[in-house]
Image 1 (cartoon, rainbow, N blue to C red):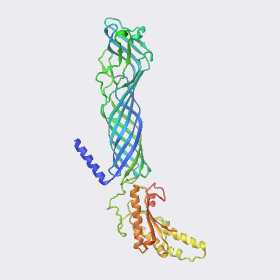
Image 2 (spheres, rainbow, N blue to C red; image 1 turned 90 degrees about the vertical axis):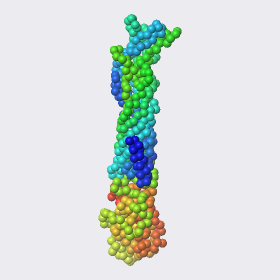
Image 3 (cartoon, rainbow, N blue to C red; image 1 turned 90 degrees about the horizontal axis):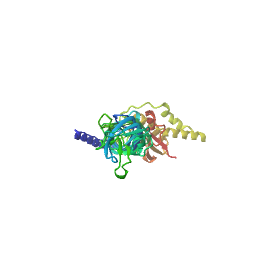
Length: 484
């Protein structure tokens, strides 16, 4: 079954590399509630604050679908609290040369637990909505343990008793030097537990993410959203020889009269109630996290697609965007009616041009009128189209009439696009629009020498903000500029 999944993934990647070539490098970080989830046999567990940071790589199969991977370091924090517990263990009294039962009554114990993992995600992301503003991602993560640390303390008291065979309990308050008696929160050098470690196993997590995408620059995006990681397997590594929760130590030899005790981590020890057998505090552990996440992504590749409606894609295939198609070939398009003031009435042009110039003011006004008519943009191109439709040819015919009437006028031709698509793609589309307009002028009798230059301005000079499809149609244009 696994080899079929791998084969399918390889085929998808190969197909994507042929049809689409966008890549993404990113840095990301997130934080929120994060913990090592378990149900302790005694006491209670709560999750703390944690998070992750790392780097990522994305491969776009289509403009909407991408595969994500990378590496990140994740930190999970939990807190264990124990109000009261009685536990005991078998200990050795080297001074009396006898074994005895060492019993402890603990009040108000707290322990912080931290687990660190290096996680490798494999996720699929889908971008949707107007201009691909929203995204959702899902997949799995493999986490390799780096560290497991604990830090515990007794905020209340601990009372130790020594139960010897055929003797009353040894719990006199003056036996503190033998580790027996009642100890307040800092009355014994080994009473506090600090700096312990515990072992973890590889984790596998279900990972979900959703949010919004913001385009900061042509090839830079910011993803902001929420994430949820849920551990699917038990990562608890049971110690081979767990120590008692409260361990007694009595040295041999000259110091055998003195003794100490230490409180071990709940993650690496076991406890023994007076009337039961030894048992661990837990035998199952799984990471869990929920929070907010930011990803700063840098896009690159030959066909970087950005902020594009799903039904209007710029592609790089020769069939859809020929470099130099015939002037009279145009795809059928459905365009909106241009506003009345944007298209000059041709019959009025000779009136303006032939008006007798009585003074300098009238001459300057006539020249301004001619310039305005010739430099009026021809817009409303469909997103991946560079051919002229019938309405656009009609507008340019009015400019051609003036150019023929004034043969000394020379022009630049600039092709413009909206902000949908990569810089490389838009540079090409803008140049194709300018070249097609030039070819049409020449076919209608305008000398090529009068066209000084054709240039692609891509989306560097928008007339209006690229905030809606209506505005983008205004920015997708060809414009003639008179050479002064």
